[in-house]
Image 1 (cartoon, rainbow, N blue to C red):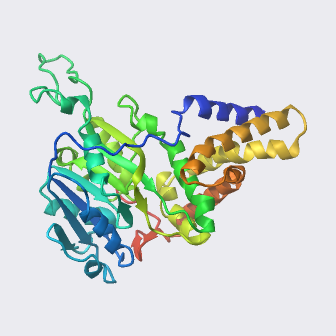
Image 2: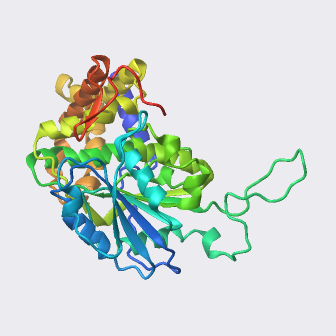
Image 3: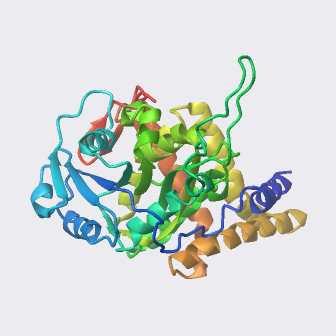
Length: 400
């Protein structure tokens, strides 16, 4: 029975789960038809080692419109602000003390948004290097939707056609793209990174299939926090950054708030790369454990279901192969092969050997253990920590 269940799960994932395993989409570098002003907000806390090349790459953007870089120094204990340098279109904002109920990154973003003026905002992390074509490519995708290219007299997707009282109003035209986000290429040089980082991207795609995120009719919503381009009017319409102020998984939370108001785009980036290193397995463990239990809404029931589901998906097929020599062996082998096959496009993206796909059950077990560790940290009052900053005592979930 378990063998058939494992095989059935993998057949479903392969043919009916939004082709999550594909390593796409990816934007082609292009120039937007118009060039609206853009403000780039970079929240930074203790990033002196990486901030100089990051800011340099943003200042070097080949964008025909006006753009500014707003670096928000989030109470750094090092020389982050000084290391960023100076430039006419670079503004360094000294962050104010974080109010209760806010996550540190979102408080920094809120201060950057408050200081901005442009109609388009780019949120990006302080460890990401950008190709000079990146900003233009993102803006081109944001303006690509039919509603933007149509005559200016046509209503946007968030507007409705006039109707009589008591009748249902319907949207006019296709939904306008309101948010563009990309999963940047992550650092993958150490042994720990080669073993675990590609799987992080793969599991993210499994949770949030990009094709479903990009489908306006699907409820699935997600974004990758390293690169988020959003319209100011859209952000204001949903209540600004304050509306998600306590979210630790801020990118996905923002996407969920935005999607009812218009279309999302989520893809992979060939023009942006994270330079944040995770040299040890312990570093990646802490990265996972920081928000894993938050993703499960601090629920023991959801934790149990998640662990059971992951065991069926990843450990069940291997167990059938190792323990049986009948039809159950065949079911397990097919399921194991399907899992390994779906991992290959991600490995190809990171230019890694396909042999790593055979170790995916062990990698999944690592992620399962880190998720359980995240729950234990919550229950024992340690809470989440990031950049020497604690978020609660672990016994109370932050506000949604």
